Amino acid sequence: MRLLPAARPRLLALGEPTHREDALLDLRNEVFRQLVEQEGYRTIAIESDCMAGLVVDDYVTSGKGTLDEVMERGFSHGWGASAANRELVRWMRAHNDGRPESRWLRFAGFDGPLEITAAASPRQALTALHGYLSTWVDADLLPCTAETLDDLLGADDRWTDPAAMTDPARSVGRSAEAARLRLLTDDLVTLLDTQSPHLVEATSGDDWDRARLYGRTATGLLRYHHWMADTSPARMARLCAQRDVMMAHNLIGLAERGRTFVHAHNSHLQRPKSSMRMWEGRVEWWSAGALVSAELGAQYAFVATALGTIRHQGVDTPPPDTLEGRLYALPADRCVIDSERLTAALGDTPPEPRVSPWFGYSPLDPAHLTACDGVVFVKDVPRS
Image (cartoon, rainbow, N blue to C red; front, side, top):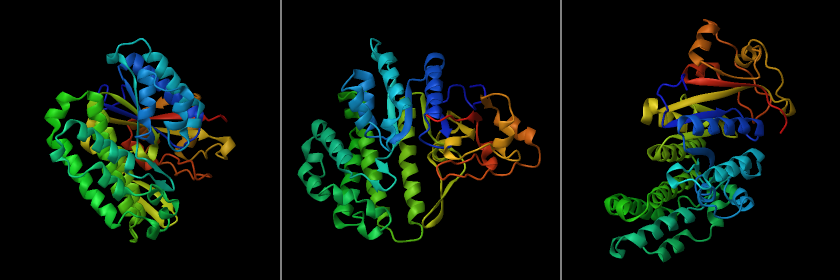
């Protein structure tokens, strides 16, 4: 905490250089427990579907459902199969049991309802927003009926067709129905804003927060589908950027609620531009962390994770002239490093970038070191 630009920042982000390694998630869980017990953090946000995350939050706060059901329905990207994620949810529920609401821990997904090869229909978010407004606002103010939304949305598989990721012609994002839905969503979100004094007073804080989440998600998904139908060379850069904008908006919403510990891939949380080589070539975009940092300043802190080996994935001992190679020479198995002191110690000759032998692992870019508030180094990641 002494490395951070502000004491107890509202968003404290810990990145990871790869997914699906429970040893790194166990470390995340350990850090979160210490932040809860010693620093007053009450929310954890992970790189998972923000709408599905409401299922997890309901369970850890009220015990709704069973642990098995929550792990199946409350995570995207297959994260529900992780033993470390299961332990996180179990511990949060046990922590909250018998405590007053003011001391409850909260869970959030901050990713959009997106998978690698598909995007969700905006139906869930859009109908939930309309339902909230129709309950609390005069019917004459609503821009449309629920039946109109249902007719325009049509069958969900029109929206979720995985072929649309590589074939823009398969996307419905620029259909007449999608264009009408974007206008109606804008009207619904505007109605939410214009009625905020009444809604904040008339409904619970959770209901108000969720209504805003529904609005953000419906708006973001319709934009995402719009760009899925794009045929320009900038298509994938726009899609990557739109995903991270959705993430950033969700994180800022969580920061308004209180101190939050954030965990996701380094590329979503870093301050410099992110990049990825895809089938259409190399794309660049500003990450959620960069966007949030521009908005919150010192109230956003980012600690990157670098690692030495994941031998079961072919990531062996790093070359000694790389950043990870220098850190691998340290005696500790895990350590927290002051990035400014490390940069000074490296001198005028920066380390060579480490070449990843595996697509799923991204080494820490030495050029990004000065944009981190600290680095966690894990020497060896064992097989889960």
